[in-house]
Image 1: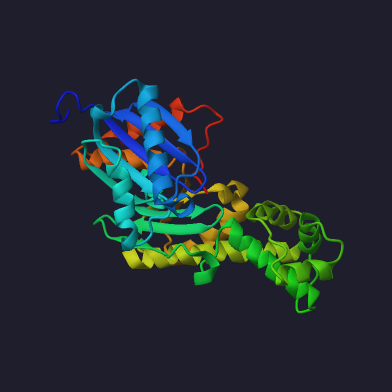
Image 2: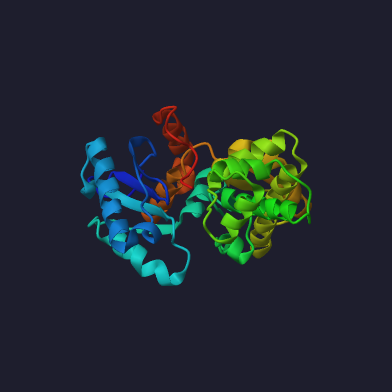
Length: 339
């Protein structure tokens, strides 16, 4: 189906995340030959050398599992957590080139490969709400849009970390009587192992207590249980995430078109508690947008990115790739991306 030399018969995709790294190897038709998972691979966490070493390990592992050599790779695609700005491009390229694979490659932020994997047309918007939040998009002409991905520091809310920040504000307001009492106070006290509300606030103020994003689950449970303060901040966090999405839609000028919005990340496991207010905010601006959950790991999008580099139409192999990836993974394999 391609003018590639006979020995060039595989496509490689790698999704480098802050928590996990996935590698996926397929044939030129999109049938899965190997899938492997490793730990954190982000250069922001491991440094440039750690990122490079992790990349070498995960790529060699997937080729070994598939029983093929690196020389069989025809095209490569990479989704890279931590790749946010032009100044980081050289670090990303150096790691990929260190693999020593004689094949064309393309790379982008890891959220973008989730869009490529999930959007049937290959364009639209991807929303990642895990520990943090990020939004990336591209239109049919290939123009891209984004938020900074720098969380509450830049006023971008929507992930688990930001939900906990809103919880801290609510608990603080309850202590100062600016706001109503909330069950979140006791939840945070239990987590911090302090006996009084004053001890909790002092510990937070003095940076002696640090509340984990894992507490987002407790906030969601409190909201589902009827705590009005928890309900309000869950709604606000989802609404803010929707405003982040709308900003990217506005950049792409697609608000009047039908398109896919791919939902990625563990926070969406809360279902309609998050998705309903998110969708309401988005549909006020882009009424024909379709919210869909990603059904396979985003690394499938990296394979499609790699296919494009060697002249294979992503649309041609996408149905086979998605079906083959879904059937290849066991129930214990996560379909949610790294947080």
